Image (cartoon, rainbow, N blue to C red; front, side, top):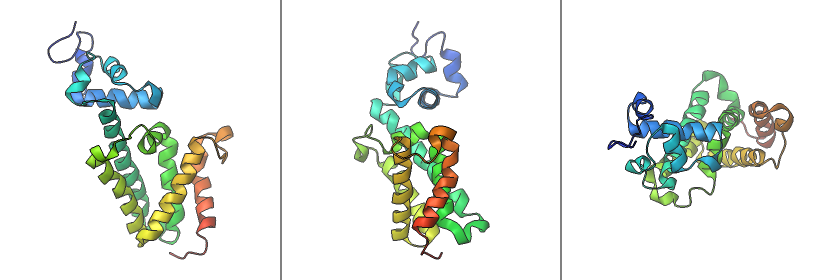
Amino acid sequence: MDRSDGTTETGRARAYHHGDLRNALLDAARTILEEESLAELSLRAVARKAGVSHAAPYRHFPNHEALLAELATEGFAELRDEIGSVVNSPDVESDRIAKIGAAYMRFVARRPALASLMFGPQLPNRDSFPKLGEMADAVGSEIGTALHDSALGLAVWAAVHGLAMLILRNVVDLGQRKSGLDVLPSRAEIILRSLFSTRRD
């Protein structure tokens, strides 16, 4: 039966195992996104996965888009960290553009559903979620700072992101149809080296 704290008898232990209801809901949402699909990610499905009542998610997420915005915000933070970990390595100084592209593609290969959510039409009211915009901007800033040129950073981001979206939609095949998404980082490096071959870091 439903309890006043939003959990069910069967789901109470699972929700509190995660520390609090909000984290339990987010854990459930991440699992659905990664193991099922974005299309399956509803508030009702999240509640069911977390073992709480159908009304419980509304305590922290007023609507479906708010939950998706939180997941996308986390995704942008993870992507920024992925890029930052590469550009802060001393061995990439002479090949920063290619390494940034590879880092971007590693994220896309590891989190394809999340990447699709972050840039897809499921978030039509992005201006209603300031943190989402801030974290998206932080990705561009990370790339621009790494390349010491904000315009070049935007060009690199546009190039690698466009390639990533073409791949995720199976418009372009860089070998992923046969070998899987793990081939993408190395292929992205090759393409970016060719595209920006006249540039010297």
